[in-house]
Amino acid sequence: MTFHFDELETRAPDVRERETFQALRNLLAQSLTRLPALAAWLGNPDPDSLTDRRALAKLPVLRKLDLMEMQAANPPFGGLADAEALNGNRVFMSPGPVWEPQGLGIDPWQSARSLFAAGFRAGDIVHNSLAYHMTPGGFILDEGARALGCLVFPAGIGNTEAQVDAAQRLKPSGFTGTPDYLKVILEKADEMRVDLSSIRRAMVSGGALFPSLRQYYADRRVSVLQSYATADLGIIAYESADADGAPHPGMIVSENMIVEIVRPGTDDPVVDGEVGELVVTTLNDGYPLIRFGTGDLSAILPGASPCGRTGLRIKGWMGRADQRTKVKGMFVDPKQIAQVLAKHPEVARARLVVSRSGEADMMVLKVEPAANASPDTAALEATLGSIAKLRGGIEIVVPGSLPNDGKVIADERDYSS
Image 1 (cartoon, helix red, strand yellow):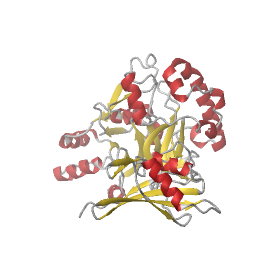
Image 2 (image 1 turned 90 degrees about the vertical axis):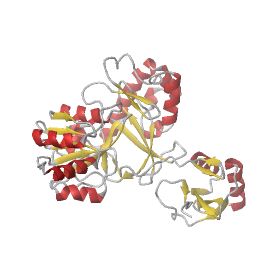
Image 3 (image 1 turned 135 degrees about the vertical axis):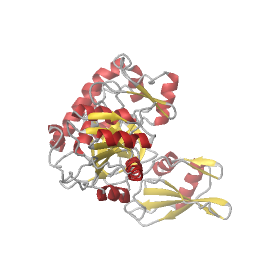
Image 4 (image 1 turned 180 degrees about the horizontal axis):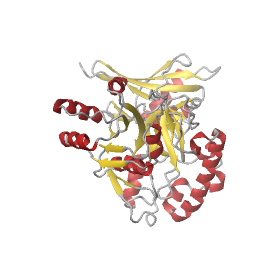
């Protein structure tokens, strides 16, 4: 794809950074007054002080458990949303429960530009098979497609034969839904001897688009790209493609969002390229989520996309960051490993490996020494035992040898025998 949704996508990175942080300061100057709960959670920061990522990183990360507790104490939005501004809008519920308000204005979840990158254009008929029930999934792509000027059929999920029949009659050029459900529809159409060759492109989300599945669609001449979204934030990042529909590496972060990658168990950003938890700040007037921890793992890719979009790129979804695990009947949390490292600056990186020895749980903290340092294994073992309340061994490993997969705790126990 050689055309872009708007001029924001091709801004110089330093211009984007400067303008995005200015927008963040303007947003907080208004929101901290209107939303005392947000101000209290963030520690009543001076909006003018948030000039760059280093300043932003001093604010706390809001994780889903924090949000659920705040919403339970102050329903429905925990005081973090401007309820008056949201009047006349929609509210959704995700498991937890977590209440998510629809944002303000047209295309509040920023899905139009991701659909544009996937080849959708005004006049396209779109068969949308994401759920419209309770959760915002169906509405996220529905709003973006209509903002582009597409005609949307809100199919929702299930009742596949009826969906095939509807698609046969309506002849949509585009599909939106989960990565695997389009295959279900196409195979049902084959079984029913129905021609759905009108579907030429798709934007999928809500699951993994495996290479074999992408190839299946390519063999059927359907160009499929994916977006990464959450119910709380909308479209966080999306794929783009070359003129032949082949996807470019990584996913481009949506405009009006600030993405950080932090080490699981801490709120501290990692160096570019290192895998960690994806933390997002979104410039949403009605629901300004600041440093929202998604609980998902990802990493930043260097450079710009070959499509000409200059936004930050991430590798996409790489697993879950929640690595809290039970050892000998007690939970061990990545935060505890971070506390161990805080007491031992001679350690650069660490990874707690949990395994089995017969019927017993075992754990070993593998540590990479900092430059020119020699960690004391006995001292580290004592600190680990004091903080985790469990005995664990220490293994010094070669710097750079621990996998770059975002794991602070690796549960390698085999329960098959």
